[in-house]
Amino acid sequence: MATSPKAADRPKLAEQRAIVLVCLAVFGLMTGQQMVNPILAPLARELGFSELALGFVMFVGASGVVLAGSFWGRRAVAWGHRTVLLISLVGATVGLLAFAVVAHIGLTGALSVPVLYVLVILTRGVVFGLAWAATPVTAQSYVAEMTSGEDERVRGMSIFGAAQGIGLAVGPAVGGLLSVAGLVPPMYAAPAVLVVITVVVAVSVPRPQVRREVPEPVRISPFDGRMWPFLTIGFGLYLAMTIVLMTAGFLLQDRLGLTANETGTVTGMVTLAGAAMIVLVQAVAVHRLGWAPLRLMRTGAVLMTVGMLVVAVAPTGPLIAAGVALLGAGLGFGMPGIMSAPSLLAPREAQAGVAGLVNATVALTFMFGPLVGNALYELGDTVPYIAGTVMLAAVVVFTLFHRGVRQVEDASSAPEPAARTAAPEER
Image (cartoon, rainbow, N blue to C red; front, side, top):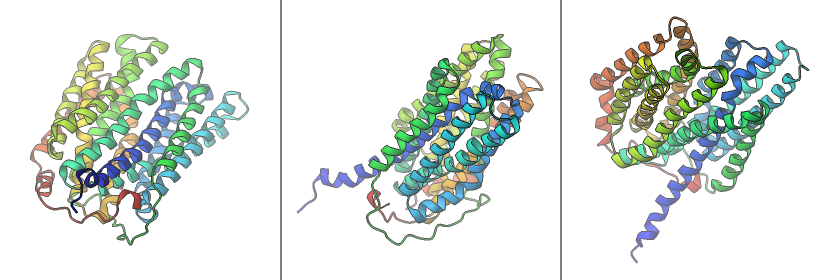
C-alpha cells in the first residue's frame, strides 16, 4: 500500500517541531541574560564596582563559553541533546537566581565590597557562564544533525539565529520596562523566565526511547582548513556588532548631549532597532530568498560595512539607529551562513565540534569587544566605528576572494558526508 503524503510528511514535521523546541531554549537563555544586562551598569555603581570591574565579570562569563563550549558539544553527543539542554537551563537559572540574591543583599550594604564582588563573579560569571555555554552549542549541533543539504541546513540555522535575535530584542525591552520599578525586579524576573522555559523543554522535548550506537565525537581544530575561514568571518562580523553595542550608550550621550536617564531610554531603542532587524531578516528574508551560505555571508558583510560607516558619521539619533539597523540586518544575513557553511563541510560525528568552535568564536567577541571598543572610544568618539568599518571592509574582501571560503560552494552540490541515524524522538 502506498504511503499517504500526510504520513510521509510526519517525520519531517516532527523534526521541525523538535528544532523549534530546542531553539526555544536558546531564546529563553538569551532573554534571561539580556533582561539583566540593561541594569548592570547602574547596579555596579550602586554596589561600589568600577566600570572595569564590571567588564571583568562579563569577561569571566564569556571565558566560560570559550573554555566549555567544546566540552558541552561532546557531552551532547554522549548524553543526548535533551539532557544537556536541561542541565544548561537549570544551571543558568541557579546562577542568575544566586546573582539576584547576592546583589539584592549587596544593595542593603550587608556585605563588604570585596566579598560582594567575589560572589558576583562566582554567580554571574562562573556558574552562569559555564551553564550558558551548553545551550547554544547543543542547539546548533542538534540543528546540524537534524537537517541535510544546503537549503535545509540554512533554514534550520536561521531558526537558531532568529531565536537568539528575538531574545536579544525582547530581553532588554522587558528588563528596561521592569527597571522603572527599580533594579531588583529585573534580577528576579530573569531566572523566573528560565524556570518557565526549562519546564517547557522538559515536558515538550521527547525523551530518548532508543539508545543506539553513536560515533565517538570528533575533536576538530579551529585551524582546520574547512573551519578557520568561516570562523574568521564570524569573528569579524560579531566583533563589529559587539563593539557598537558596548559603546552605543557613550556615543549617544556624547554626540546627542543626553542626560543619564535619556541615554538609557535612547540606547534601548537603538539596540532594539538592530535586534529587530536580525529577527526580521532571519525570519522572513533568509527563508524566502533561499540563498547559499556564501552569498549570505557576503551580503551580510557588505551591509554591516555600510551600517558601521553610517554610525561613524551620523549626527542624529535616527541616523545612528539606521546604522545600527543596517548592522543588525547584515548580521541577520551573515549568521546562518557562518553557522551552516562549516557544518556542511564536516561529517556527522564532527557536528558537535563544529558547533563548539562557532560558539566559542562568538564568545571571544564578547570577551574582547568591550575592551577593544572602550579603549578605542577613549581616543575619540568616531575611532571605534572607523576602525570597525575598515575591519568589515577587509571581511568583505576576504569573502569575495579567499579560496578557503569558496570551498563551501563545492560542498553544497556534494552529498552529505554521513547520513543521519536518529529521529528527533530518539535523541
